[in-house]
Image (cartoon, rainbow, N blue to C red; front, side, top):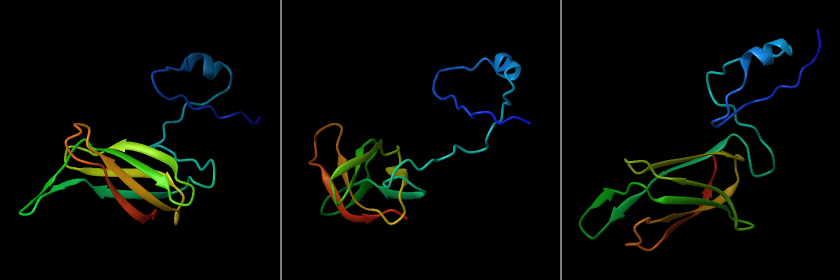
Amino acid sequence: MSLKIIRCFYGSYIADQVKLKQMGFRHIIFPKLLITSIGSNQGLGQINGVTTEQDISSTKLFPNAQICVFKKSTRELLWETKSKANGDYHVRNIAVGLECFVVAFDPNREYNAVIEDAVVAK
């Protein structure tokens, strides 16, 4: 048995399965996307939240907000995403215990950006 390098193909690239089989590779479909840790900022932690619009009398969900997660100690931008139609956002692949701050931006520029400080990835 020989050891082969595992290669993963993502995006719009379609691998030639016949050629890969001829080269001795196996096609394995994983049930979930694998997360790999590349540095001290990445890991199995995540930050979750909900974007809302608040006024004096009510609170309603705020969809499609631009979410940016920064490492607090260095102010380094780690991830960007958008909140879903129900206002939820999920940021994964962050080191567990890493202290961050999250900034949400209104894509329509009707509201000022908001920040949530001292968010710890769990």
